[in-house]
Figure 1 (cartoon, one colour):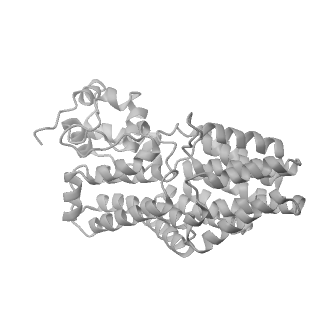
Figure 2 (cartoon, rainbow, N blue to C red):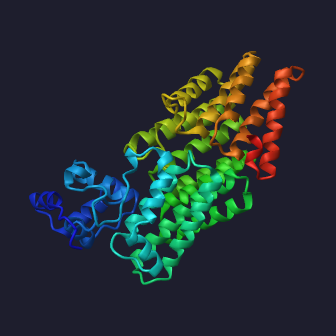
Figure 3 (cartoon, rainbow, N blue to C red):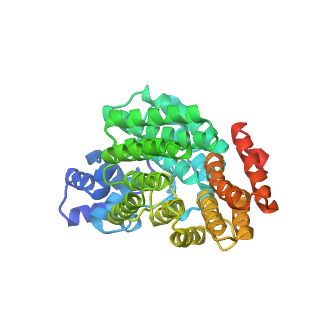
Length: 430
């Protein structure tokens, strides 16, 4: 296209290191990110980068380039929002609340809209679609589950049209991976809304897509969803089984860390303190070996903040009150903005429940109920998780304070939430 601006910095770096385009592509695929993401960089992709046809590569390629060269994408000549290109969005500079708007903006570009309508994959389309999926996954913590479900279903219908179009085998594989991540996200929001059968159908579909293309991390997340469902439903042996099966598939990835932490939570529910502690430590060790994530708010990315959050609940269930309190307070602090709002409201809601349980065990009814009510007052929450965790606090309160008015007040709030979940009507909590 005539508006493309050649990327002279990238070409200069390649020439300085005496690499052909094919050599550079092979080295990108051999980076830790290339191996973890099963990147399929080739000579043609390098040519398009150097010609300026793609001004801002997909997140996985940006990370692989930095690992290969030691330079940030901007230092290699890449730029965001260059005129005449698909407007790929750099997620790390964008608050999660803006991710849904950015995703809509990306789909609104003329180039991508035309390609989707034509069921044809042109230059840059796969990168744009992958970036759009990343944006939806970043929106998960703060966008209403119903809104995200509807948007994800719409995108799946659009992307599925490409699978029957004029595509190569490699493009078919990449589209299956994109579809797999969208389907996994859809399963999560279905479950948040209490739509159990739809969630399981989506989870199985995501696993199958991962299996077809040999994508271990996608398969790992499908197992993680199974462990999560079992945890909420009280099937704790199944949590441990699913988590361990997923670890056999996930490789060194965020999915592996989350599966290890889910194993720890399942073991904590069973009361196996020794094995739960070992799983928590193992998860921390795996996490330490992973590169720092560029987008830690991405639903399928694990970072230190998420480890602290998972550990808080595990320690709560193990009745290790001091460590539970420490990790819950850290979770709230890490995810609370200066104006008092949260960038991870579901985690913060869970942390309030953990603190409520700790206070109840220590004999402070006022503080316990105050923390429980704070969890209900948080705007964006998974109703399924909220009801499950609120039930934990309600049981402790009724065990120790059954005749107290404050305990009864929280019980009534919990019962209302449970009815809202059963009726699939989150607005009943307002």
